[in-house]
Image 1: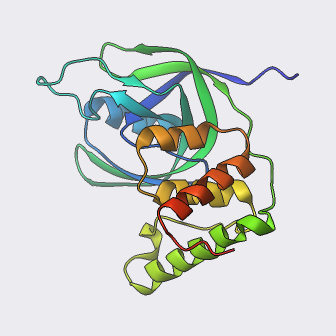
Image 2 (image 1 turned 120 degrees about the vertical axis):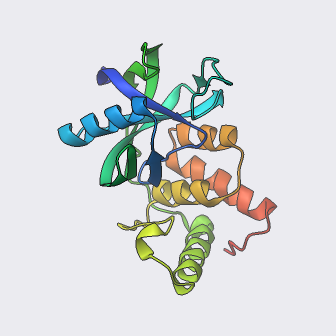
Amino acid sequence: MTTPLTLRQLPLFPLQTVLFPGGWLPLRIFEVRYLDMVKRCHRAQAPFGVVCLTQGQEVASAATPGTETFQPVGTLARIEQLEQPQPGLLHITCRGQQRFRVTHAQKLPQGLWVADVDMLDDDLPTPVTDDLSGTVHSLQQVLHSLTTQGGDPSRLPVQPPYAWHDAGWVANRWSELLPLPNDLKHRLMSLDSPLLRLELVSDLLDKMRIDSAR
């Protein structure tokens, strides 16, 4: 058994969302603690960690001074695009990368969270089985519908490169799109088996009566 890769003092961005590997995440940054962190990561071409909040707010204020708590498993986010429309404001787009598990976290005096984390294995390439092929077809239909509605293609929730035959990729994209509670999205993201993740997604599609005809 190999020893997991450990990252020390990884800057964290607790959000009320779950980032999946391969997913796209646009963020509007205006808090000083995150402006500094994002600029440092961008200059160093280094990722930061996105973790889903279980308690607390994304934006700190005097009215909500409590400590945030967040899920133990998160995803590295690499900055793909960065714009500064005005001083004190950044627009960034990030792509989800490898998952990690927090082993120790601390909040620095300026309010930024940093953590020691163990990296989790990437999904192994896993073909979509015949009985789950409907999840692929219905996802393609959703993307086609969104594309024909016009607008900026770079802002679509599903971005290339596409991996229609990979169970983990399809499961992740559906998990992002479906209106699920964050705790359920986190459980799906944390699963080590991409095929099991897609099977659970298929069950959810059936329950929501979203067409995933086999």
